[in-house]
Image 1 (tube, rainbow, N blue to C red):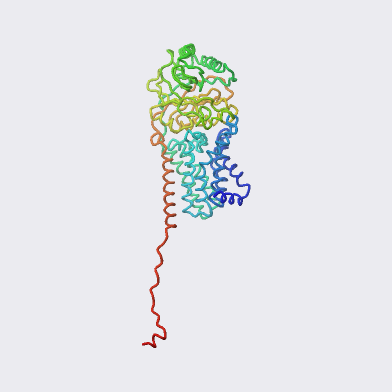
Image 2: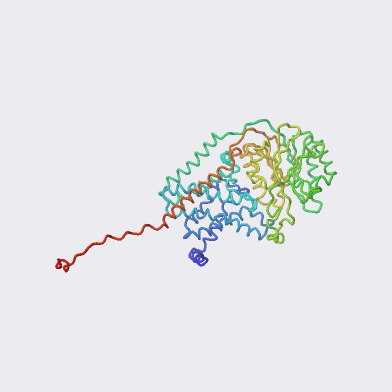
Length: 529
C-alpha cells in the first residue's frame, strides 16, 4: 500500500501538494480581521477543483489532509507565538478530518457529472464538510473555532438562518454555493442543476427572512462594560488590573446601570481568602448602585485546584451565584494527556498546571430586576453553540461572556472572538455581552446586530449600554442542531446505497448452464441402419 501511495504521489505534479495547503488556507480571509465575508462563497472553489482532478482516491485523501491542515493553521495562526512548532502538529492532526470530504468531492464532482450526480453533490458535499466541523468541534480537538458559517457574522440574512439552524445551517449554505460554482465551471450538462442549487439557497434565505419568528422586544437593561486595557506582565499584574478596574467602575456612579461586567481573570485571588478584595467590591457595588459580575482566576481557599469563576457581587458581598468555567482551552488551560503531551510546555506557553473545570451551567438571578436571569460563559465557551442554547432554554434573558485575549492582543484573535457573540445572539434570540480585559468588547442585540460602539483593543474605559431584551424562542433553541442530524442522515443513506451497489457488483452471477447435448449421426450410423 505504501509503495502504491508513493507511486501515485510521484506521478502527480509537484505543485499539487503546496497548492492543496494554500487552497485550504484561503477561507481564513473571510473571518475577522480581514472579514471578507463574501469571499467565503468562492473560497472553497480552488480546493474543490484540485480535489476533483485527483488521479486516484489516495491522492484526493492526501490533498484533503493537506488542505485541512492549511485551513486549521491559517485560522489559528495567531497561536504560533504560544504553541510554536506544536501548532504544526495540531494542524496536521486535525487536518485528517477533511479526508472523507475530499473523497466525496472526487467521487461526486470528478469527471463530468450529469444532473443526477450534480444534485447529489449539492447535498452531500456540504454534508461532508459539516461532518468534519462536527468532529473537530469536540473540545479535545480544539473546539468549534473557525466554523465556516461563523464567517457570516455581519450578514443579517445569514444571522436569520442561524436563528433557524444555528451556525451549522449557515455553513451548509456556504459550501453548497461553492459546490454550485464548481459545477457551473466544470460540468455543462449539470449547469441547470447548479443554477437550481444557487436559486434554492437564495429562496431558502428569503423564506427564512420572511417566515422565521423574530425576537419580540420586552424592555431593556442598562449594562456597563469595564475594560481596563493592557497591563504589562509582572508579579503584581493581577493587583494592578484590579485597581484599574475598580477606578474605571467608580466612574459609573450616577449612570444607573443595572449590571456591571468585568472581563475574564479580572480578579486574581480567591475572594474567600482575600476579604479585603471582597470588601472593596461590595463597596464599589454600593457606590455604583448595581451588582458586579467579576471573574476570579485563582486557586480556591476551600476548593482544590485553579478555577475560572464568574462571581456576582452585590453591596453585601458575593450573592452566592457562582459559575465555574466548564470547557477549558486545550494547552492554554490544560494539556490533554499530559503524561504524553507534557513536552508542549517546553516548546510553548502551554499550561504548567491543569485548571479544574466546572461541572454544570449556572443561571444567575439579577438583583433588582425580578425575572431577569443571566447566563454566564467564560471566554472560549462562547464558541460552543450548545452552551448558549442550553442557557437560553433554561430561561436566560442575557448571555454574558467574560473574556481575555491579551496574549494575542495584536493578532486576529480579538476580532474573531468578538464576532462569535453575533452568532450566539442570533441563534438564541437573546442579547450577548462580550466583556474583555483588553478588547474587543461589544454588545449584540437579540438578532445579532451590534448595540452601540465596540471597545477597541486600544481602549481603557467603562461604558454603559442600553441592551434590548427579548422573549420568545428561536427555532434553533427549540430544535437544536437539526442540520447536523440531517447531514449525517444524508451521508448515511449515501454510504448505504454505495455499499449495496458495491455488493451487487461483486456478487458472482449464476453459472452459465451447459448447452443441451445434440446427437450427431455420422454417415457410419446411417449405413448401420
